[in-house]
Amino acid sequence: MQQYNDIEQLNHEIGLLLDAIDTTPAEEEKSDLLVQTLLHLIGERQTFVQAIIESEDVTQQEVQAQLQLTQEFAAKANKALIHRRDLLTTRQSNKRKINVYKDIDLNR
Image 1 (cartoon, rainbow, N blue to C red):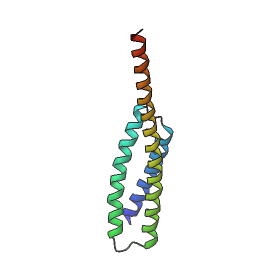
Image 2: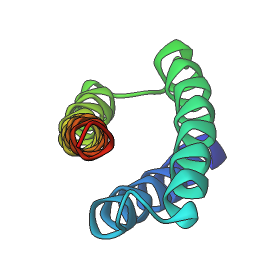
Image 3: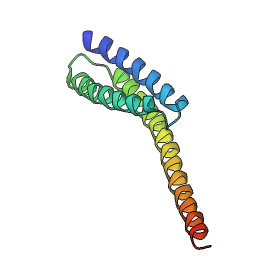
Image 4: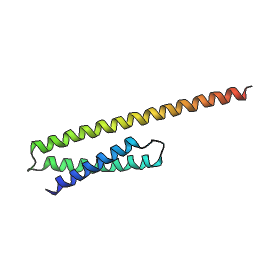
């Protein structure tokens, strides 16, 4: 079953991308490229999972394994999302503090 081999390859690539996103600083441009590639691969994976689910020769274990991987990928992606959101919040807070200090300095 070629679809199953294809999805296994996608699963492997998605896992590697999530690991790379986790270890790449959010400030680097490479990080944006990794996220774009991840979104593309997730879209492909959804298509393959749908085809596998609709296939008549799929077993419950295969579907269960894909569900488990989906949940693992979602947890890793959510962890990265929270980390990046925290970085953005911190960066915005720091910018506001810098602007306040600039205003104070200008008023002296």
